[in-house]
Image 1 (cartoon, helix red, strand yellow):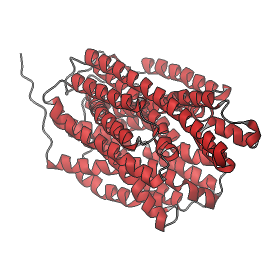
Image 2 (image 1 turned 90 degrees about the horizontal axis):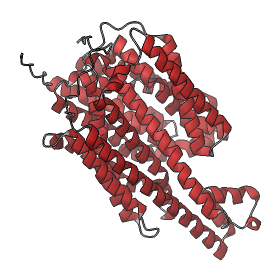
Image 3 (image 1 turned 90 degrees about the vertical axis):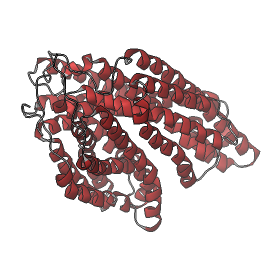
Image 4 (image 1 turned 135 degrees about the vertical axis):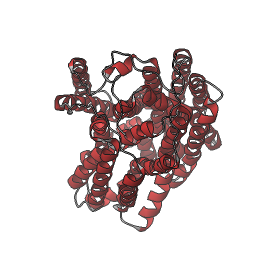
Length: 524
């Protein structure tokens, strides 16, 4: 039997290129966090309606989620570096336009363009890592750095955004991206190699339309349910997306060169890792809803202090991502992921018994423990998903990975948010006397803790204190139950991963021989 030569190891050029790749990833994460800080200033100057404000916040995520698969496939065909540089240029231009928007509709349009450009970043950068780092151990380190760059952006974003908004207009938060993208456009051609599938056919436009038609209605419906509760329109939107998704899958089965190679889903390393990644995003994004409310509305911290106390959890995520390579040298990825999920379950279990008063230290410790546990899952699941695909299909595999993250986060916000909202409303149903204020104020207090805080301030006195205590107690009940659900989900996934992935190694697994992409070779 012929010995297979070991994969080539990355050189200094690849590691320097990784630093360049981390820049747009950090910016992507920062862009998501700084906008929330700028919303009050945007509302004051542009005076958007409630619907326009919602679109300003959401349209970026809609376009990113809807176009990830398309951009991943396009990168496989025209080249990952080329697509990344095109996206970087578009992102820089859209950032300038957004910064100097003169109306709410203009800002919505430029945010949509930012979403189109942003959709190129994750699949292009991750697929470049797949091709630049062929050695499994080095690739795990590189993906850990890639994931850490998102966490670093989440840490830097609120602090930098707060400083900019203190001294400059709201548009300054969008201009952060311009020098980063200029640097990427200068260094990218020098340090990043080009990769593409030399045998790829032309992009199937019908598949592109079906993928958009499948993803966008589902994401829209889930977000609407999360924000406004179950209704006919979001339910029909989800049903339409699922129906178009079925048509999309049927079309991929008939195409000689499909947009998505469905053979990937027959690989245990791919499917189980993808599911673990999605569920990890489900619990992480779902619990974010409660963390901010607890810090600001229960403990009474300012937004700045709440953001600062969120930094230890983000820092723990970076540390957890960086220690993964050392762990997988001693243990199988399945046991590292399973152990990480169990540790994360402990963190969420701590949150399930969070005290209502003087619980800041307890909550910070919970965030640190859960972040340390989830970080190996994000790193290794991404590594196994991308490593399972052949190099020429790395773009679409990366896009599928990121799309599952978007779906997981949206579902977590919708489902876990609905659980907490139902408990809050049930607890507050009789806690707000109707005669104290107008109908709208009473309904707001029965729906959210923010509404209860506002109404308690209007009422004042002992009645206001009682109302505020009732609202905080209602939030705590929902938060504790939701955290318990998250802990149970994580324990289930930990067992599933430990069993189903126990044979998976860091190198990924070969595709089935009947897969359309099994015979193709990458171009360097």
